[in-house]
Length: 259
Image 1 (cartoon, one colour):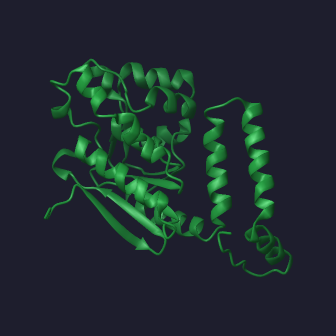
Image 2 (cartoon, helix red, strand yellow):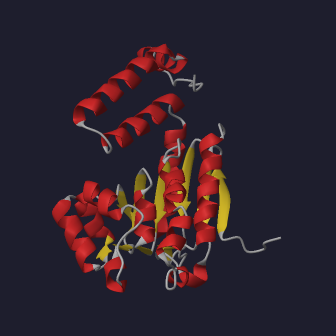
């Protein structure tokens, strides 16, 4: 039995799962085992009707300092292909539940990419972001050239990616990379507060909104608008739509059933 799991699964509130990276000796660097553990936990949360929101967290010193270079130094192209990183990253981006990244300390390289796979990023004032891959002769492989560019625009992304220099949480906030900036001590409390609020909302609305926003990143405006209209129309067949509107008209709290 593993007495020191590399990924801890916590339940800070009903309906909320917190996945905590637990390799403090290497600042939560992502080795293949940790990547696989995250992917499995995300798949389980995605399929579990009791789970409403997922929080990703690390430690005070590091959310995640990037890839574990010990697994990269002698790796060949065929070995990298065999690791099927696309499926491991896809388990996070494809999670049906909202994912909140609670970032303290270092979020560099794969750690920054891990945060960008979330739907909401809450960062502490002492957090550091960056994509330093260029400094060791490689480039981002977990989506930063695409996700970062969509988040902050071409020119800011080019500077970050081509210099490899870290940047502060306040700069990340000004660039639009993070959702909220709070004190380091408040990061997980705020992430949990957001999770607890979201879990009270109608699950089908939450799911369709997440899907529509992600669709906007992968398609044209016209196609995205068509997707939104279909999802909007579909929600009119749900109990929660009727309950939500009636509760608002009657000035009472709604009781959502996820149906």
